[in-house]
Image (cartoon, rainbow, N blue to C red; front, top):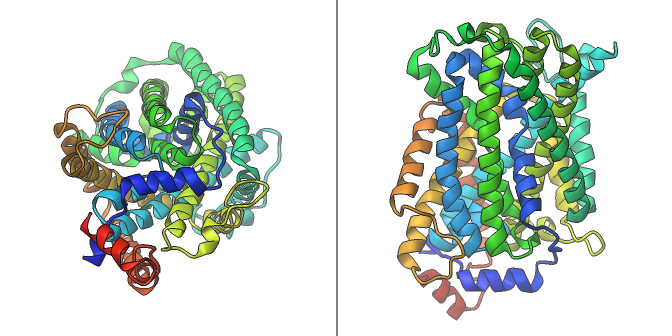
Length: 477
């Protein structure tokens, strides 16, 4: 029974409102920009090239399929965010519905998602930054330009730009959410303007013959492409990590989640159509800046420079939001006793988990410097899809066990929408490579060892850490 002990929803909300120590500075527009900041980045500016090589022009459909899977899960997220506006995202929601062991597993998976996403995006940022420097005739030494083994035929040892950008983001996040919000909003406006510029200029250079054959690798290629570009959509769930720093979270969280995903889906599909219409998909092989390549092929080099700048700013906001989400997740797990206390300590001046931010930032920066992008991206997708499956299961359970709980937003089409979300996410998971599954299971095994060695006995819900009556009540819920 101790493995499935649950937290009381009312107690969780009351505790977060009473003593979290975090400042509430975010509104609906801030959350939408936070979501867009997390979503539009490496997925569209970098991985579209990889997706085109897998799906051909059918990449357009790949983006739509991934959007459907994310959209279904987003509705479940929106219901939970409006019902339990507490930091920790799906970890917190699972703790209230499925029990501690499931909460720990999904929290551990989210650590994989947020941590590796920050590192993966930083690696993508490095490619565009070096491309921009190259335009000015500046070239970094090969040894510090990429992770070991990232560039075939070159001796690379460390991705220094990726490491440094993560340190800069960490410094910003440690200073406070108000400062972070301002920087994020400015960069989101700029990168949206750059994406629109690409669409307006690029649409006139589309050659419909480049879309034939539309699915050169069959529907299997389209499905594999969907599993790859799924990475382009992750991040909207990080919005829920901001729950305790949001004004009127019951209303504003669902708006931020659904609004950011809708805007990004429309832009992704249009960009994929234009990009594959300008450049034959075969020419994206080995290219880490496919969007700017497409506009260069159109002969609009002046726009390519803006694309590189927009990509750099756009990818920077993704690093910012992913790192932010990971820190807030670690904060929530630590507050529950299952991570060391240092992760939930709030700085008296900055009102942020200052120490945790720097510990996590340094860890992500090191991974970004040493691990190639393609290795990281697949693992991120696996962790995210697993989280989406559990959030969809959890919303079904909470509707059944606590039907009268106040809900500012309700997931429509119950129970069919969550079931469809589960099926679509599992489908994408089984289209990932075998080695990705193996690495994911190894990560899961490590997490279970840590749970039984440390987290279980240090949990605030363990009988050693709470009165017997409270423990019995939590166990029964």
